[in-house]
Length: 191
Image (cartoon, rainbow, N blue to C red; front, side, top):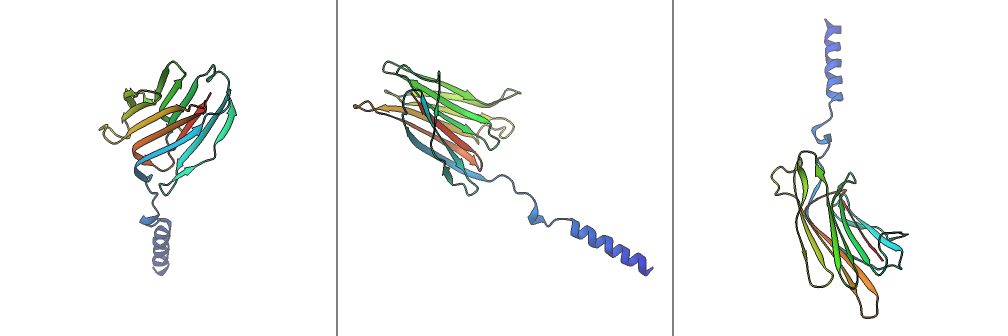
């Protein structure tokens, strides 16, 4: 009888030790609220691209990584400036993107959205252009992470400013209605 009681207590003790406390349960990804990220990059020499990544860290702060310079072929050229604004989630999936190409005569743009297989995901709501070199694209999301379509909304702005002395600057920004840690923004400029 005594041995059975000790065995029962030992099993109860093991069960109690094996179960983690409620506070040790994994936390849900941290939501950081609305966030606006802005930056500018100098236009590099022809045939080169400058790119920077900005990460939303674990404290919902922005970490600006160093500017990377690389050689590119076929991206721009012949007096065409190219600027891009790309928003990625924490799994490195490109959610929304705006790319603008500008030369002395015209400006064109491309957008990209990540769609889900059941006719859901990110959608381009509208693209507007101002006089000059500025383009704005607004994106909404309705899908597995938000069936209402009211939670996520990304707005990308890109522009190229060409000064009288011929130097140029690419300016990009993204405004996110809701943001999570680990999301990151990449923007670039090439000539």
